[in-house]
Length: 380
Image 1: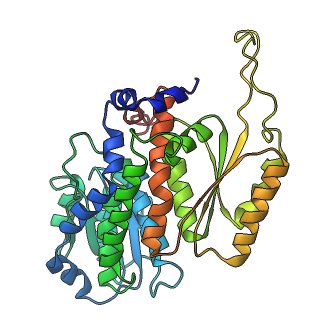
Image 2: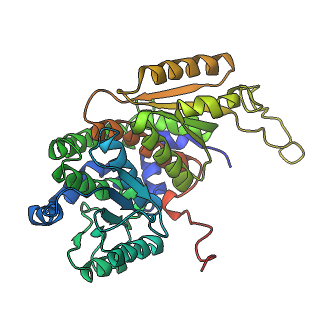
Image 3: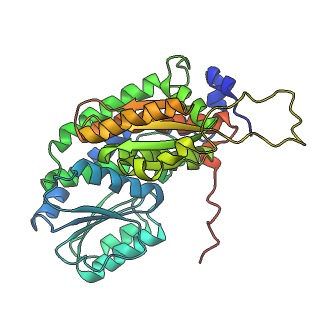
């Protein structure tokens, strides 16, 4: 499969190729945050905090919905007064009990593991919150559980079939507001407003009509589409961002990647920079016999997603990684988050990479929203 980078120069062709309007949904990130915030009413928040601060906050979600829990965990950070943990199911850890708050998140409201865990939390007497569409299996569990609170998923008025991967900010926003009410996240309301405005700006800069010369998302799409990317993040913020980028590249473009977080990745993955996929080698021969001669193996590219508040030792490792990569002929992309609230810093890394994953898929001839999970229906 060859990457058509010329498509990225033609905004009209790009929009026509995106038959499921994934670019529009990605550009609606800021609007999604505002729509979701509007669905979180003060009365419901008061019900959640009326029993006091829980011993732990447990966020349960599958696939793209789980990413919302990852964002909350990173925003709460290591200074959180209570543990914030994320699980994918299909069952709750044994230590979770009535003094803990379980928040079940599902963009569809029908994810089997999430519904199962929510029901288990109800049986254990846990405090339960459901974030999902109304009239779904998960919402029914919440309705049947005494004291449970439900928030409907808030979406902007964009026509199309929304999936969990396109609903990250709609699902994350209620979590941040809940954590703000519980005193786990500081300045939650202000952070959501600031982050939504920032994402509006990203949507403008990364739009299809933006020239690839100044469009960071389009340039990154070409870079990762022609390589095997190593995605390394720094700190909790960078760790969330690289995992999100890897998910998006897989779902939107069918592209594999190697994911790690510094400093751990420096110990376990740095050997790749000297491995057989390192170095750019020679340019592919246009006269090569495509039948008798195999395609050249994709070469590595290091993509660093760096947090402004990364530890000094981690910063030194990131700098060293770029130097080693240069010595080994491995090109490097660096995206850095500037100073600000941790939620906004996450958006600074995810905003452009989300667009890049969509552009990569389109340039590879894939309709990103038509990709299917090959394991669906094979496990009962």
